[in-house]
Image 1 (cartoon, rainbow, N blue to C red):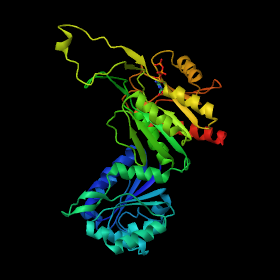
Image 2 (image 1 turned 90 degrees about the vertical axis):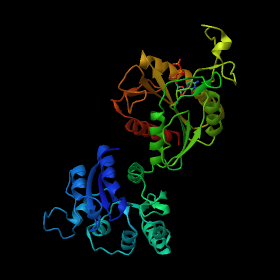
Image 3 (image 1 turned 60 degrees about the horizontal axis):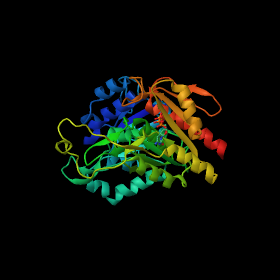
Image 4 (image 1 turned 90 degrees about the horizontal axis):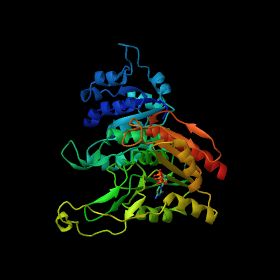
Length: 405
Ligand code: CTP
């Protein structure tokens, strides 16, 4: 996402200690951040910390004669988004009723930017009818919310009331800032490597962290798509708002993708599918002592189905209008090999990446890809974070959807 201007408003609750981390996440992603605090917030978090992390003055006084730098209207106009984290029950009540007795409430009433609130409070305060009514008023006015999560609360109670983690709040913020350009579209994304069992403990797999596919799924969800992420074995957390279908082998992935195809508008095959599987799988662990001393193991491998090719064939046969995108992991002759792959499989677009590079592709957060089009056009992208590659790819997918409509 291009750098955005985000105000982080902090109110006086114990969860304010997480506000600096939120600022760090946002500035780390390249966004410009300004912080405003309620009068009580400095009792929980130092404005100096927020100022240092945001590189901007952080105020808590509506009538700050000290610096004269915090003008609530200027801050309200500057913001493209206001995140209120944490949002106490008191602040929810004041915002719901238009009370502007401090800098935070004044900035929020004055802004035309969307407001995302991250409530944090004791579970009884959260569940109290008046809080819920106030919240409903805010939602009616278009306020977005993230959390609270359930768990152990700082006050000792268990239940809902924990402020969401900074990463989750940031993700919710990006969603608010992203136009819902894929709303109404069902997108299947495959990610990660498949694993083909040899015996009870051993398997053949492809090297893949799944990061590229997960980034695509996250971006598609941000753009409002219904996303089905068919993922091989990877420890990556499921992106917010994404339905994850866990698979292990290529045959399982094949079954799920072809089952989901009819109800989807887009299929993006970022998975590293193992091309071969053992003809036979032993349910028991193969013991070396049974093989004899120094004996090797011969494994008879058979070809797995080509999921992408089968998807393209099915789309053609049924006269479907799905946009189908493949990936090409190549170690040499990248572009010609990817072009042959595009033709062989018959998809709308191939994303080629050079897996021999150490700074891109496998297991790292950046990727250098080329988009290979059926008409022969090649678009070479610079080395970019995978989230950016995902956004560039989905821009192309949206264009293809527009042409298919
Ligand atoms: N793919 C697939 N099913 C397979 C193999 C690959 O759906 N059995 C998909 C991948 O998800 C990717 C594209 O096909 O979108 C290309 O995968 P890649 O591993 O680069 O190439 P292969 O088709 O396996 O060909 P080769 O290994 O010979 O390069």
